[in-house]
Image (cartoon, rainbow, N blue to C red; front, side):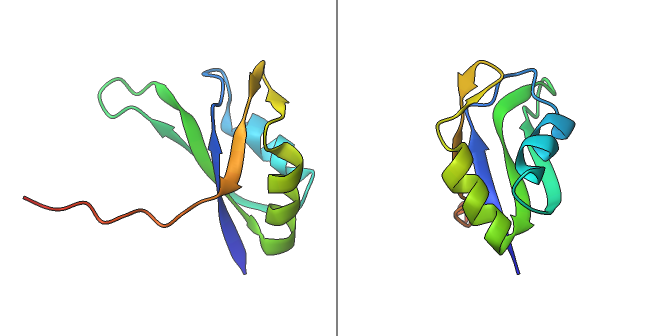
Length: 87
């Protein structure tokens, strides 16, 4: 099984490779998705990492609140996205 992890307060300069390297120290990283602004294509400062269960729990414990590129990142288990009403 795998877990989806929310990673917030990322520096704008963070790349998928940076995230993969940081989280890879705790287990197998299945995927990394950095969220970009739809209009500008610029990073929005957060993303999601999918990892194996054991590695995900260790990464959340170890990386939450830690300095990453000069910012203290927020790391926790991602909640399923709420359905947005359609008009």
